[in-house]
Length: 187
Image (cartoon, rainbow, N blue to C red):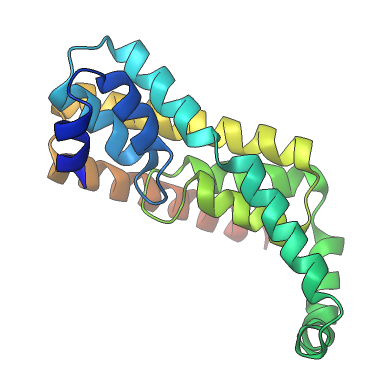
């Protein structure tokens, strides 16, 4: 896939970075190292193109998911599924405020690993019925953080994939440890 962008966008690497950032699971995790490896653009421009490209699918995904949920609401299997998990969903909703949900959404998007980006965050926001405006802001903040982390890793490690993977795993481990410590303190 990367060869396609190199072959067809060699004169317009800025457009290639923007388009790669729009692709699910690739997003900034591939767009930024791609920009460093194959273009002579300034780091801030690579950051900006990657960040803006990753945000393009956000609102359409949320709309589509909400539309699908609305269409399924009259179907028997969906009602049965809702009834089965209704009490669990109500318990979760009563325990966490909108702010807390948005912070968690933002942190989820901010972890620069596959399946934790703008696409996944938008799917979650649509499924959980978070307000569109607030969801977009939370996802944008998360994407801003993830893009900044990938930019920092690319600057520090020269875009080497193995180092970026190790850095991403360290970030996930730190988030896990912080969450675990918070749970222990609450008890």
